[in-house]
Image (cartoon, rainbow, N blue to C red; front, side, top):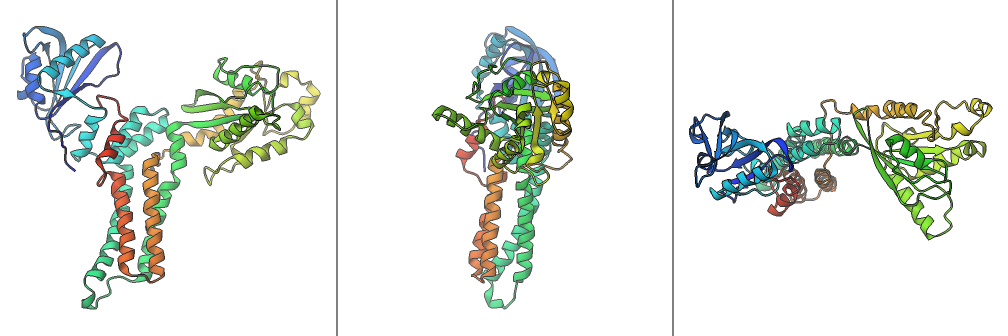
Length: 469
């Protein structure tokens, strides 16, 4: 795949807004000649050594008037971000000033860069593959420490290396089939069916292992989603407000006040928690309540963990087992290492209303006893979060975790094509059909890394980036 655009692009790379310093990035064959026209220092950019920074002035190319004091960084192809000649101008970070400087650069022949175009050029010039380009986006937009680590590992080629090894093994099997098809008259058997079936099974297991890391990768990337559930008027909204230390949810004595989902975020121990306050669990009396219950069940299914809020009445009436079963039935499986029940925090609220005798009668240490009203026990609940979920923060151990849905989908398609090849081999169907399935599997992997991808898909992927990256 070749770059269609041969022109030089420029954009402000730093975020919009006033700051101490702002950076303008220029890339392309005319980057140095443009820099010569807008920068005045001891050394012309076109004559400067690569990766050298020079103090000077940004000047009006038409009049020679000084506009700002700047640092000009010169980077020569091919060892640059885009593999093209690049210049970065560090100026004072005023919004109007940076736009004014950029206009002068455009007057010298550069054009405005499109969103993600610098990274797109890095990809098209072969510096990075598509998984690494997507990792750059994830690195910029990471919201958790573990998300940062995983994105950086992917940027270093973590996914690429795994896929490349898998593809090499697939190519070995494909070439054996092609030899069998192309040279039947030579009477040579190029492969043994059992050996190929064993090889394909091993390859498919490696693909499935990467796919299976997606749920955890998604948690690493986006944080932990926790649904706050329970019967009406047990204090779910009060607990949400207490956890985030803001009045986000409406608190009322009237049961069923929360009918719409209320979402909030909380950072704890370096982990992002996405908390969702749900409608009370009960038998619905009307359409509005039915819709609230439906949304609650959907939220439970989408969540990684659930806080089940109960009060002393639930214990006295024996409702706890039924409530845990209800929530467990609506949860999805996210990991073979964590059962559904282990992902439920049971919180006994309103202990401020209980007498000492009632408190002593509850011997279940798995319950976290709190008062959302006074804040008693809430710090213990947060500690339990870290104890139970802390392993997610430490998931990164040098192993890459899949966190991109596009990549997951293509890996699934690749694995399915291998399954079809296995079936055809077992049924002794012609090698041509087996080869077609293996070629499909390889093509899906090529699409994953960007070795074969339509231009419109590139636009979709890179348009997510900000301008200047």
